[in-house]
Length: 471
Image (cartoon, one colour):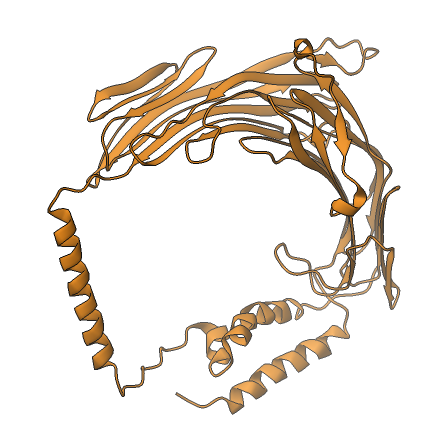
């Protein structure tokens, strides 16, 4: 643990509130599943049926092992440990777990081993608290190296009021061996293929000269969509939903929101001081990174998964949109990101993104920090300002990811610092750091003028319906 505020008079503290353990194994052969499990500390396993399986959870370690000697069987052993904890105010806690994964394939099929650790905080609304992390190692006999030693790593930071969080670790070993067919199996296979081919030819012959009977339409969108091209038919359901959402009228009002993020910074930590390798990070040139994106948006109520509307720029060029007193602006540049929106009754959004690629030396922790300011206020809809920092290591077979987010909804204004960290294993690691800023005003009801658009859209749909042939 690290005391992040030496002047607050609070000693760093980490207390586990509750914890759980689980160990499990299973084997599947000829459609029959045989398994066993325990909850709490202990182990389960067996040494028969052509395999040695073992899974255990102790006070200081997790382990899962599969050693298969027969074909045509699927084996799995897994163990996990999880805990909920409380972290004192202004405290950083660092988690490390020495790990080894190994996979050797001798019978044909698949052999895979995994180990992972993840953590997160629940009270991210407290200024100064950080987001979560996920660190993992993989051993795959089909993609050498099959064995890998490393350190699972993660770091969390509480804010000025402390934080509750969780920590989880797991191990998993899985082997699927290829079946070894009996001598007569090949003849049965060929005979089966011959029968299948004969049935297929007979089915095709029966279908000559017949028209398939149309299936009855189901639902409003399906009924309206008969006779349209498949691509248009697929678009009717979300289109109808969007127009029905516009049916709820509303009154104009005023809200605004903004986010600003300056240049980010980082620190490096040597996780293996005796290996003779100085910790170093190398940032890729901007030309080889998907560096900047800006979006200025307005229109329908915002729903996750829908495409953005409005102006976009993959080069990070400043964007500005204005209509009838509603504005959205976004600047995503090397010096930082700024997004701002102002609404008098229309949903608006401004989004900016920066992303950089980098490489790390072996056994190196990188911690990224991003300072910024967010504000939102208004009397219409839901104004909000969101900032996010994420770092991901994407090298195989090891990986890690950390993230942090700050969101302000409703009236308010504050400064923030985002923090995210990741650590490389016994080899150099490539990764990306991604920063996002979003300002928005969610308006559940549109301007009165949009009723005309809704009615026109409904009329267009029913005009198509009149032209479609009846079944």
